[in-house]
Length: 259
Image 1 (tube, one colour):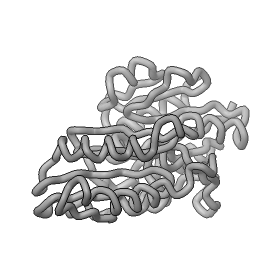
Image 2: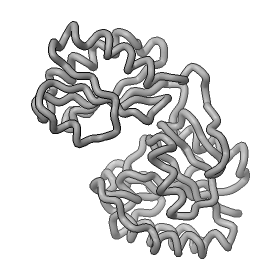
Image 3: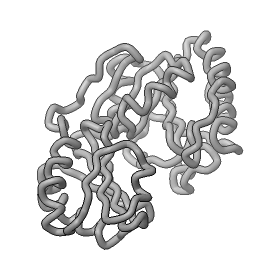
């Protein structure tokens, strides 16, 4: 049976924010592509932040984007939206926070940008990632520092405006001063499984990552790099002895060469 292998980006291909050269791993992938193996990416990032990694690795498979809201079957294919209700979520949040936040946090600057260096600027800042469409990332800073109190204000406003009863989900990451928004219409694990079943059945499905919610999926083989979360590793078929690209190379060899 042939195999479809998905990579997560953060924590696996890119560790600690570094942007490594991918020539060595691309060479390994090229070798296995000749055996009919399909390689894709599954990420919370939008396509504009994913395409360069996909291209450098010379992958040949589908791309799951923005927490599973959309997928592409190849580099040149158009995005396919899982649920139309997820459309323009980031735009809606930007409009709401621009209008509402100054009433609760006087003097705040609401900045829509992908330039994370802006987080160091003076004053009270809400930075919203620019490239997203179906999800949203909001960062709160006060004089360049993480502001948990201000983060709580934003979290409460968002949950009131976009209630969970209407399938909106907000995850707060206090240590990063960050809120991640998405819809409950989709999930990147479910979307990955859907894409395999629809386009690549009956291929075996493998996912190399560092942390996932995987309790409900029985027909996906999860694999972990060394730096992965402990609870995730406990449910994985293979766990590498190294982080990052070295760990991925090890996992690929074990996946391809398994009986």
